[in-house]
Amino acid sequence: MPQIQEDAPIVRVLGVNRPGVARHEFVAANFFMQRVLARYHDELDVSAEARELTVAADRTVQFLQNPSGARSGRCAADALGSSRSEV
Image (tube, rainbow, N blue to C red; front, top):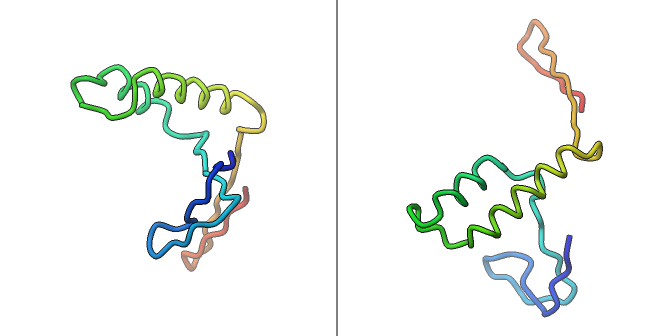
């Protein structure tokens, strides 16, 4: 996560500015929606630049093609309706 250069709050409500705050990046965001928003940028009056959305979508696709972005899992339910997951 990239570190913010200036002091910043870590929460939005009643947050106190703190040094060394890092911003979350959602690398595996929905690349399909990012591309839709980039393509229809003007029609949808999107505040982010179309180029920024395209770059974000490309980064997401790269991340998902990388083995570190691959995830697998299983979910099983028992007779009582409880479930258990493995990731």
